[in-house]
Image (cartoon, rainbow, N blue to C red; front, side, top):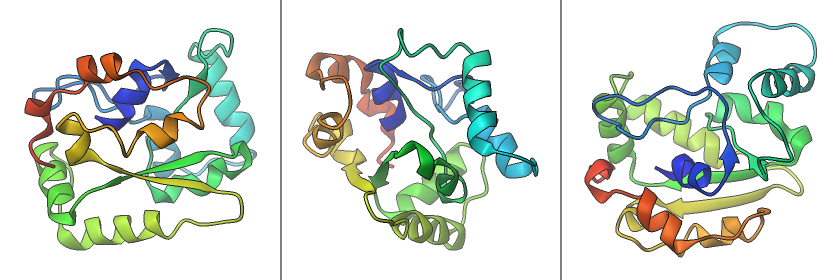
Length: 172
């Protein structure tokens, strides 16, 4: 939901894991980053990422910003891009339930580890935001609006209202 909200405001994500019966709007998880995690690639990640973006339709004149939805295992590779880190702040049991619905490995141990790792990402100059997904699903955008103040686009409540579907959120 959160990555899709950025997409609805003009973020480019490139080819992503598509929609399915439990997520009718799509997951916005980069297929490239999934492959990057699973395989070892020699050379510069930055060069590979920029090449992949260009070959998959990214054009900075058409897209004001780009996004990469990923886990903590990939984030370090993006430091050079001076990214904003947006963390979906929600109870671990909701994360486990969401992963189980999606057919992914779901355990409290895995979710706690990943959540701990992403919260632990920190380095000088990093802009880190915690967005409250349950509040966003209810139409309260106050936790995500500060992120948009750091982006080259303005938050548009009408775009958010059109994108966010509380029925698809499942309380987690």
